[in-house]
Image 1: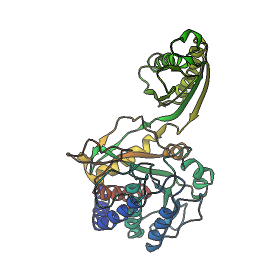
Image 2 (image 1 turned 135 degrees about the vertical axis):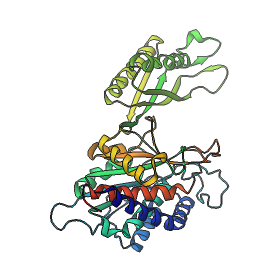
Image 3 (image 1 turned 90 degrees about the vertical axis):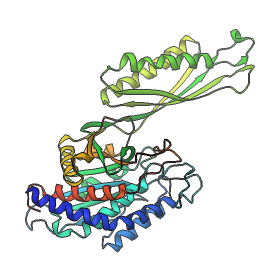
Image 4 (image 1 turned 120 degrees about the vertical axis):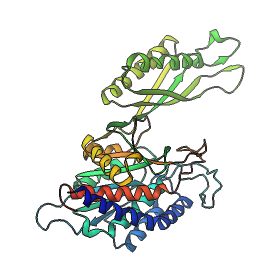
Length: 410
């Protein structure tokens, strides 16, 4: 395929995305006003189906109670030979946060907000469906549109969708997705080959001692003192167990014990998170974590209950698919709008798809030069630049066209 053919298609997608932008921004604002928590996205699911139906795209039989899967069939594929399918995914759930923004389309649901950009992701995939519906003749294969529920709440929606047969039934040969990041300038993207996002595990520790009067600590088995030493000891797992070149994070983020100045409690509960980019290191740190907690507890004559809840795995971007996405982004956005990204210690259940199907996941810029300091993911003041909708829907559309064309003329 010639670069001239690519540039012609890119120009058509740019024009279509520009025309659709006001409509897609309105979709995003509706979604933002009516957020729904993980596994509860019933109205969101109905809204997605309704919009796709207006495009002439019928939803496939559901794989979960919420979420939508739809197949957009291209008309430019060869009559003989196997049809290729590329999957594009957006997550649709919101977070249990009370919005603190002051714009005119704030959440109408108390204690629930799209604070992670999933309203943007959903609107962009709907926009891409609209762009590609108008270019079926150029689509040399099929596009699987995956509107996935429950990314925010473990065990997430990706794994049950895979277990329900998503990838086996539709057999995509590649899968792509994007995520809003205000740390990247709006209109730009940032991409990373290989390990991009961390495995995230939840840590739970309960220390059982013997409470008593704080004036007589020698008569107690103090769980607070033991907990302090456990927290300190756990820090050596990253500094002395993890190799210096391997990213790892271990944070105890909650400690709860006691309720008075003169009472040593009988119990202390702690919670935290462990993030790793390597599955072998992840397993080693799990083992060392439990051993460290129990041995330090024993030294202070207290008992420890330890639980590690394994979360999403390492998100590994296929190098070849990331090269393809990188090239497509440069062709569509221009060289100056595509940047390398360092690995991140955040986690994403898109990692499950990438274990089964080659693909790539990148940062979509939603920040501006004067972006407020509180404009952060999972913040009640998260407020992405809506013009990123045009960038995201266009890039997803162009990448689908580019991938399905392969080495053939567009």
